[in-house]
Each structure stands twice: as structure tokens, then as C-alpha cells.
Amino acid sequence: MGAAMRRIHVGNALSAFGLGFTVPYLYVYVAQVRGLGSMTAGLVLAVFAVAALIVLPFAGRAIVRRGPLPVLLIALVTAALGALSLGLSASAATVLLSAAALGAGQAVMQPALATMIVDCSTTETRSRAFATQFFLQNLGLGVGGLIGGHLVDTTSASSFTLLFAIEAAMFLVLVAVMATVRAPRAPHVEAVPGRAAGGSWKQLLGNRAMVQLCVLGFVLFFACYGQFESGLSAYGVEAAGITTSALGTALAANTLMIVVAQFAVLKFVERRKRSRVIAAVGLIWAVAWAVAGYAGLGHGSQTMATAAFISTYALFGLGEAMLSPTLAPLVADLAPTGLAGQYNSAFALVKQLALAIGPAVGGPLGASLHAPYIVAFLLFSLGITVLAVRLGRQLTDVQNQPSLARSRVVTQGRAPADAVAAAEA
Image (cartoon, rainbow, N blue to C red):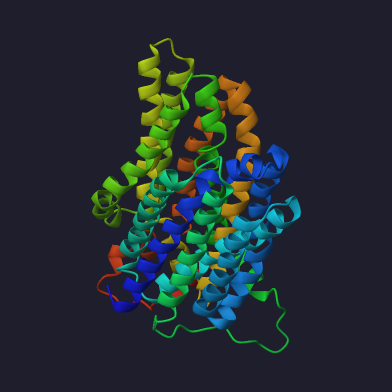
């Protein structure tokens, strides 16, 4: 790990640490502390998703044309201003505008940081780099949330202002850290006379492997991340009788599983075909949904139901640990020369779309239609396995299993030209 990669990982941990201070308490802050009601609080959460969907298509092109670092610095300053403003806002209008700035900045950080990791790694080291990023993200969120929980006071708006100020400060510290990064100079796509502005998007949509990966990514994020704090939690409370403290324990079990299992599964994942790893995750998550079904629909004791529900979140964490060194490196290896930022932004856009639709669909189902909810998402998980197997047929041997290329010279930040051509054929 070079100096540039170390700074990227430190910056990634700092941003996650700052987010951990406010993410768990955003709804309570808007609805209760500021007295703006549940409707405004719901709109704030929606604004985060909408802002991300608006800026990500432009972020990809900016990263391609200007490089990831300038785009990241602008995103960090925007997020810092949004966080600080949100902590000081007392009206619905200013809260929504602040949330839009914070959401847009957060959304652009993801593909910018991912592209910097691509530029500072090789095909051989990329899986470990992204696994480290995911590990530090979860660790930072967990520690930030734990400290924030001890600082927050729902009777005092100033305590929330402090949390948002800490979050803004972390973003600005990250600006200072990332400004010192000297990443390898990656090739960028220059303007081509007569070429339409959307040419890179057309090229991306012509890459069948990337399109299939985006479809698979949508199902992954819809069936897992999009259910954590909406459908699955509603199902646990309504069907399984899970208490709020047990729900918190389940979320902690998810984070703990990721922290403990991340590097334990890394060596296993690095030696396997990526499509088979993703297919295995689908099967693991199908088991997780079956266990959740037992928690809410079985006839065991409340203790058994609670244990099963916590186990569901832990199984999801195991799947996440397997995906972190698999998905992002695959996106990078599918990207042609200079378009890693575009591909990272496209995949982030798919993720945000799934996270916006997932709670809207899963929430009502999980709260009222318990058996259909479990069956539907168990089938979605099995669908992940099917889609992963199909994706494997579109990948070259090296794209599917990078360990095969250790004896070859692989261009940094992209797949070899013949691999890309085969994927786009």
C-alpha cells in the first residue's frame, strides 16, 4: 500500500466517521427536535436520493474530464456546507436545501473515491484495496454512531448542531488530507470533434457485461441494503415482535460480522471466480430471508425469534463482506481506458436508484404482508444467483478471475484492450 492509498483510506474512514454522527438521528432531528413533522422528515430522506440521482450522471463525466481529485474536493466542500447548514436550520425550506447539498456531496464522493482507488491500485491489489475501504467505512460509521449516541440529547437542538458541526469538520479534514494525495496520472478522455456529450454513456450502454452488472447491482442493493432500515425492520417489529433495542443489536451484529469477516473471506474470494462469489452471496441471502421468515412466521419463543432476526442481519453482513472485494473491482476492470470514473458513477447511480425504490416497496410489504414479503425477497436473492451465473458468461477469464493474470502486465485502472473488446462484443 503506497502513501497515496494510505491517505485515501484514512480519508475514507474520516468521512464515514463523520457520517456516523448524524445518519442514525436525522429523522428524529427533523421531525421532533426541530418540530417539522414526519412529512418533512420523510421529504429530507427523499431529497438525499433525488439529489444523488441528479448529480451522479454529471459527476461521471466530470471525473473523466477533470480527474477524480478535483471533483472529490468540490463534493467534500459542498457536503461540509450542507451538513453545517442542516445543523443550524430551523425551517422546512432551509432543511430541505441543506439536505440537497449534503446528499449531492455524499453521492459524488463515492465514485470519486472509487476512481482514486482504481488509479492507485493494480488488478492484483484492487480487491484488497476495496475490501479495506469497505472495512473502514463500516468501522467509521459504527464508531461515529456510538459516540454520537452519547452526545445527542433529543431535548436540545444545540446537541444536534454539535453533531452536524463535527460531521462538517470531518469533511473539511478530509479535504486537507486528500489535497496531499499524489495519485498516479491516469489517462483521461479528451473531447473528440463531432462526438456527442453523451458518447461515453452510449459506449457504456453498449457494453453488455456492464449492463448486466448494473442490473445485478440493482437487485443486490434493492434486496439487501434497501431493506435494512425499512422493510426488514418493519417486518421484525410487526411480525416477529422485535424490540427497538433488539433491532439495534441486529444492526450492530451486521457491522460486527463485516469487521470480523472482511479479511477472513478476502483470500477465499480472491481465488474464486467473481461470478461464483456473487452467486454464493445470493444463496447466503436466501438463507438469511428464510431465517427471517422463521423469526416472524414460525411458532418458536420470543427469544428464538429475536436470535433468528439478529442472525439474519449477520448473514447479510457476511454477504456484504464477500461483495466488497468483488463488485467495485469488477466495475473498474470493465471500464475502457480513462472511463473508470464514468463507470463508477453509473454503478453508484444504480445503487442510489435501488436504495430509493427499495424502502418504498419493502416498507409497506414488510409492515403488513409478512409472508409475501419474505417469499418475494427470498426469490430476489435466488435471482441474484441466476443473474451472477449469466454475468459470468459475458466476462473474460481474467475479468472473472483476476488471479489468472498475475503473470501478465495489466494496464492500471482498466481491463486489457482485448478483454474490453470481448466484453463489449
